Length: 271
Image (cartoon, rainbow, N blue to C red; front, side, top):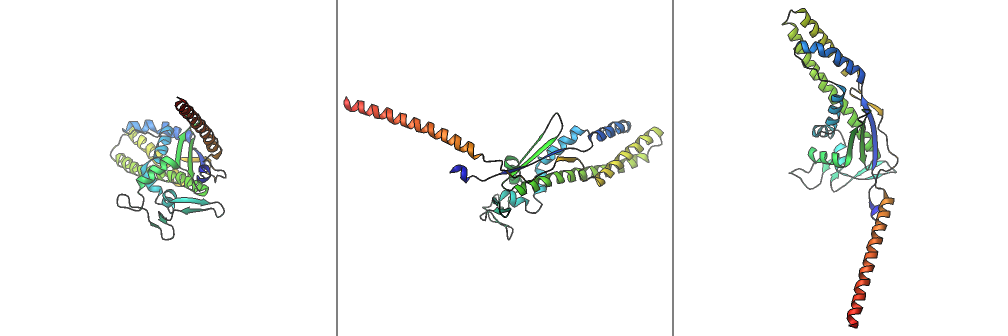
């Protein structure tokens, strides 16, 4: 009965890798010497990019950004059931009114609408898992949800927005670096220093070009997110087997105890 009452969950998975690792390493070695001449330390190895992407996906800031998109917040915090026939996600009417978009749950910290910190806990505990293969460098991201469609779409959103935010950050840093380099260029007349600055300006212009032409700026999909056809949990057969074993053991213990006390009672009566 318990196994049949449990809600099905579906897991969508994507495997991603860093874009142009070899090219990035080449650019890093090419421009690091020039940067050192003017006291600039370049730190943009592929390992650091991977760590940055993973930590961004796991961060509270990222969760706050994700729930700004339509239907993400109620799909995480108010989902009740999934209709396989209509492929529609149903919300708990006691928590969220999908027609009016009003939150009806009991207020927490004075708000009926869930905070991004509440979503962050749900995001990490029950929704998202991420790991990196240390040998291949591939990053695996999983989303588990009662709706297979939302699992796939939310995973697509995670990858897309990771690329967007990292792209925007690099674009802003590159623009600031160009301002600084052009300012330094006007202050020096030394040929070697000017050549180094020109080299670094070229690197920043290349960074800006890459941010504008590549949608998958950092993470490139090796295996794209998919709509799962089979549930990931619960595994009802294991629940039934374990329940049967546990019930049998408890039944045997109860029988032995009753037998023991019955024999003891008979002995006491005879005496």
